[in-house]
Image (tube, rainbow, N blue to C red; front, side):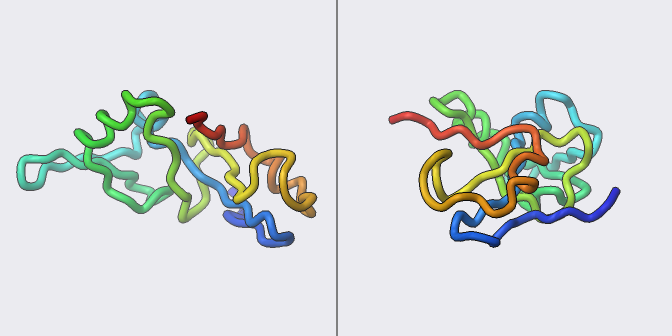
Length: 116
């Protein structure tokens, strides 16, 4: 796998790649791990696509809410099965024109904003 950009700062939009942990759980990704600590279960990615260990109970509570848990920033190249998106500090159609359309189009989708 070739190294690709995880972030783009070619313009003031400041885009970054993110991953959906809910998709990792839904597909029963073989790179997920879980452990118990102080009576709570935590899960994370062995490959450290996302670096966080997420509390499963809190995750499930948030996931049931409007918009679900959402995304976390990737810290290394996503794996082919990862549900990756590109997040920008501007909503689509707002802000500056993108100078690196390849970065935005390379991945499968854009992060959708949750309406209030």
